[in-house]
Length: 376
Image 1 (cartoon, rainbow, N blue to C red):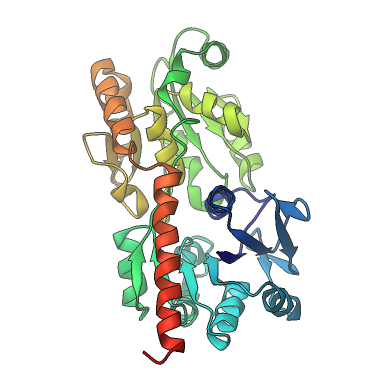
Image 2 (tube, one colour; image 1 turned 90 degrees about the vertical axis):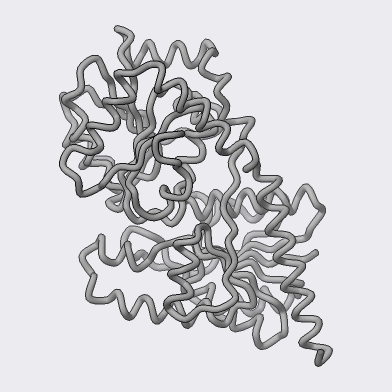
């Protein structure tokens, strides 16, 4: 199979869109697919052996936004894909979808970014109706649309998009593993962060306004507890100023085993973002065997079974994050029970299993396109 992956985000940018695209490319490699990547950024001419074409981009709301152009059409014309995978379609995604429509090449569009929510977060709520109409106009031309949760599927259908299916995200069950908790590396890390044996509560993710990491301040009154923020991004310097002199440790951006060790060094994982379409770091924490406290909104509602593998907090409730995190920190038995349930909740969500479903969607889209071409 020949797949053109047109993504609005790619390396060196690290976020949920980039991560899922990288995992999809891993699947292509394993299955012997041919692929072309079209993206606004890149770290080299190839990734995992697949050519990467870099488009022109402009900065917008701290993100590089790819700009459509004739080079994208040339690349698609030359590659002649069997199917186009469009990740978080926006400007170049729309161009790729239009190319597929003109050339009878099926397009699978993956909804991954709550642009409407981000618009409100950045003080542009007046533009939300325009963004919703734009998203509908982009997705409605795709052959198949994939949403990460039932809520995201309902949103797309509400704004007029049809042929929407649910496709979540996988998680690396080997890399993010409870066994790391007993490693020397994690013991050393815990000793560094909590030298007196304190409990450790942490967040992992991109440090951007929509993640609302500043709300970690609501937890700082807890006794015998240390706090960790793992990640980097435009909000880091402001957060470091906010938490200067407190018991918050900034670990910076981590990857691969070092990232897994930082997860394993935690006792409780906390997430404050209310605009998550999914919440990949929540799954990684669960795979590590961590109870998670996250807002009862968006993607977390479909990953956390409240009271079983974590808690869903009322994000507007006074002190709700503090109440729930403290409940876990103060009760070792509850913490261990939820840790076991957290790992079990993602045990069937390997990337291999998850992406097998994606390939089935490709095959479905190709079969439908062939029927259309044959006039059936």
